[in-house]
Length: 520
Ligand code: M6R
Image 1: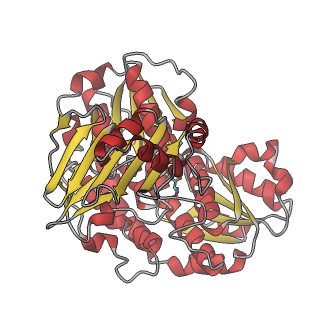
Image 2: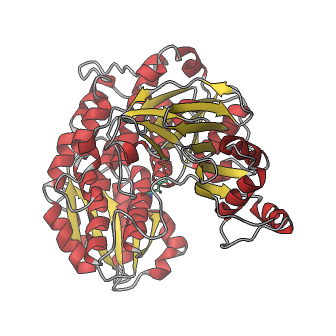
């Protein structure tokens, strides 16, 4: 047969059996112009085309393995767009006599706030007379039109040079929004709408497993330390990509917490489905309302911090920790566990936004440190206890936007290998706040200094001791140990940002990275 160039496809996802399909199509006479898996879809739809585009798309998708969010047009069935999804997000924006097919609600926000979330194995057929939705098996479905509560201002830079910088500075307000209406600051009572009528399951929970990726995984480690300290419940934190393929042991009284800013991360979604399949209850911690993870979880807590657009996650990290702290307080009251006073905990979290603001006002000090180290090719981040995940997060921020090789480690692990990296030039960033492991961290600093390493310390205001031991120090206000990451991560976000900008990097769109990773 002749390929007639009459089908065009936009595709987000990966066609896993594309090799096999391509071979078969080539045997049938199809001629390929590229090496992409997406082109297979166009030829496949062409193969099944007999005058009606949606029928051809449905037939083609039956033999496809993998993930896709697609939009298809054909010159032989014009006046029609066919969209479909499996495993990749797909949203239909409903405008005024216009439609938008997107993989993220913020993409159509400038035109409409009315959206329809397509489900897996669903197809939407758009014509000038309207739209209809069906399953790939050609059964009609009914979809509710939902209103997105974000507005256009939220997806603009608002005078900042980059979204990342705007989002770093939004954190005080973002955390107030994440707490709004959820906490009684006098007695520490927590109200989480998404958990109403879940008390029985929460009381029966014997073990918590957190699944997440990237920065959300780091928030998961903070959660592990927090929940074990406050609730005395065993918590494990798993990379979602590992969890999904290793046949994990899950009992019915396991609560799985899926943390994902976007709510669309393919590995986290698959891990959550695996956990549900094994009988666990799943609680989602998402920012994007209506995202797949949020919709498929048994219950959830939204961050309510507005869209996060910079590829480097900043305000989502601090908001995830904030809502998980509220969740821990909620469980403490439910289970009558009084490891700490709930009113005191409420007062501690109440003061966090103001403390972050005071750190942001001293951004100039971080700019100076960034200027001093912007040309380094390596950096090491070390912390212990609650600041261990902050060390990981600081290193991730730096490497993803500045392309400087950075590693995060628990400080005491340094002597088991990374200490060999210490030179007089490489900056070692210690998070050395005055918490329960402060003295231990000080001795780790001495180990680095005695090898002529350069040390930048993030320390607690009023610490009169540390300045004499390190090369640079940035002070942050005192808070409870468990909330320290909310403060100690802020200078590290700023440091990564300014070093990247000074190196001429595109911080909002770093190379090779996407905001939401919808492929495995
Ligand atoms: O949307 P998610 O929270 O599920 O995303 C997870 C990671 O892809 C994300 O945190 C990524 O690591 C960021 N680029 C980190 O800044």
